[in-house]
Length: 282
Image (cartoon, rainbow, N blue to C red):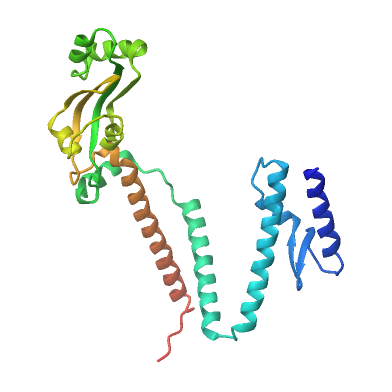
């Protein structure tokens, strides 16, 4: 029934909006307010995908109501704000900025490669250590959570403190049968906060505690928690390259884009100057 009502609403609005003759350029009008039209195609384009029929109807009704209110408010504003040279200038300045921005983005997309050699990234990182600082503690290591009733705890206590070889292999096999959670991150940096959220650590300065205690064993009423920190990077230290690499790339790419656009503008200026297109008046 709601689907029928939805179709009926659109058909009714279509009939109402077609009383006057306008060039709609192939679009199907739904609503008219003083010669301003909202088209069915516009509503369909705004409609989120995979909405059920009832939700589609409600969305369309809200969208149409919002469009009508915005149109009425705009007309009211035009009636109450007199022609203003400053307003026109601001509109023109915005249009100018928008056009230039769109053109610059098209140029960058067409002409400037986003591929940056790895050595160039590394060199920029090495030359600008002050730009890449750790904002929250980072660690590499291993985390494990197992029930209090799990077997072979003495072996687990020995294995988890070792970050390579047979010990890690033994832990991985053990975790498949007994661990509630097993996280291996010796090969990547992660924020310490992610691990602290999984630990029942009761310390006023948990970050300082972990920095000073690389091997942590805790328990609560149901589980043991084991954490081995193989590397720690404190706040204010230089961020590790593999962690900062994405930021390095974004910064270097931005620099290249700025330099490229400056070169484009300089070339335009020199060509215009050479062709006597620039006239200066005293």
